[in-house]
Image (tube, rainbow, N blue to C red; front, top):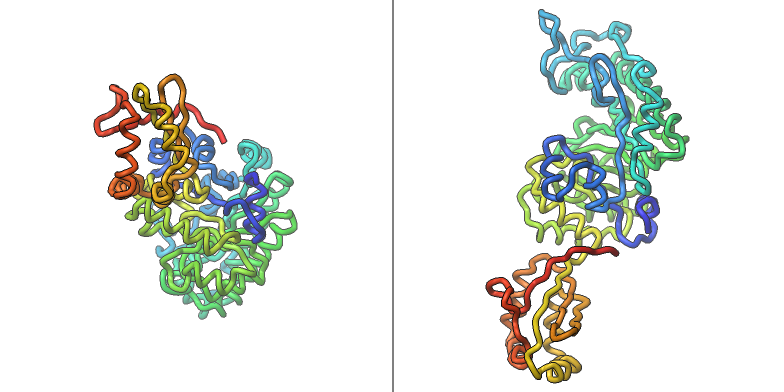
Length: 452
């Protein structure tokens, strides 16, 4: 399967050669670390190296206050000198002191047509290397915007004491995104395969607001955003961090194709539970814990998690870190382990040794009937496609290692009594190279080229 075929098959829960995978959108501080670890100089080369399936493209947006669509609204209250305060969702916002719905017109709502260039939209999508499933990242975070418009605590209170104003603000935000997305979708029609829409509804333990309130105030806008994307033939991946188990049926009913992420450590978001309860009705994206495992775990533990996820979700799960952003404290060797394990990729080993004078026929005789106990140990130690070739006095050995702790497996083989006895027959037939590294019998070789 190619990337696009694998993406569609995974998200439609059809059989796949391997599950689709996605790096996510790395944090700016993590990008140089990723480049260094993988020995590349840009994102295109990194994506080719890890061989994931989805290429995200953020909608271009440039206004006097923001160069990101997810920060299009300048809701921050201003200091006496007119400057913006440094703020988060929890800081006071423009509508903090209002309760009447007519106040919605007091804010200077941006006009997306002024700040989104269709030609730039086409250009950034056409710049994606051929063959990827292209995902437009539009966010359209109307719930998070309304929280920022008041300040989160005040917003959740206003939902009850000033519901008309809350609805007016979230509706105005939704209308902005519908207009913005329309520009992007028209400009890139036929070139996108999916869209990522995002709103964080959950905390680590539960929803931030009751399902009833989300259904009344938030989901009407979510439905409109999903329906708009569907009109353009796009798969919809909906992002929400946290524990959102109680509203997954709502997302399914609204037409979401995949839910991102499976935040593995959030309450009731275990992959087993989600697969059991919803796996026949919707697909997922994520599953690899980015809070602890990718930061503090080992490549062996990451590999084991991927194997577990692949067994649980042979399809229907786009395997990815359980947040869209890989952060700088992520262990980059764990990122490598993740994508190696998704592909079931074996590590290849080549080594060389001389044949002792007069011993070639004896060596061939031994290997024409290798002891079953030796073959069993080779398999138990995760070696596959083991081959030995001969030419002009040299033996060349090749095998593929599919395990996750090569040193431990080699130690296990070396400690096996039957293997040790086998070696007492083979080693007199061999003559190690003088240039071998310390501790080597067969001399390891450097791989200088490989292609599938």
